[in-house]
Length: 269
Image (cartoon, rainbow, N blue to C red; front, side, top):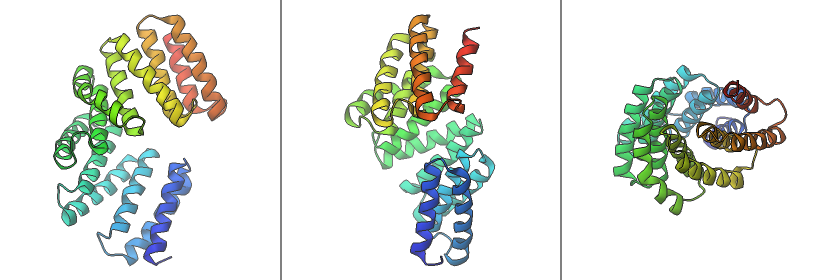
């Protein structure tokens, strides 16, 4: 398993397992492959750097944030040294450092990093590149988590229309659209939020299916928007349809659907 192509294939297999949700198997294989890569490849080898980056991403999914942060920092320092601080791959590593800070609720740190990455990605890639939009969307999300929903709307509004027209159904664009709709709702702009969330939901249904976790996330935001607007009947109708779709796709009793049931019951006490 020491040939570079074999090592690359092993890292790819681990990444695929993680993408399918098999985190325990993925993390085990990543650890095994990376141990061998560190023994046979030179520091900074792009195959090994990619493995470290993907391994860290899988650790984040498994809520192992501290370990992931160390690995993301290693990737960032390696790419900055070999490729330069403004190289797209280096900026991608900085984006991941912001992401893992956000997941640890280190919002000031995350927002500062996202702002720096956004500024550089606009220069290097352009304002409407998917990676630039990805950073913009995450920045707005982190600002929302900090309670700065008005600032989030200001950031997202100029990009939303262009992105939905030109880039349409790409997952990065749909995440931006979701964040924009949610920010509108938190600013009590319920009619606009309804339009944005409804359109985003329909696109996610077509792309992922009705019961996919990404679809359910937007669907529940639509339910919440109806509740905040005091449109209880519409909220109940959407919630019932959402739960039915989630149970059918994910299976009865799935944690994601149960989380929404719990939130619904708390709202309706």
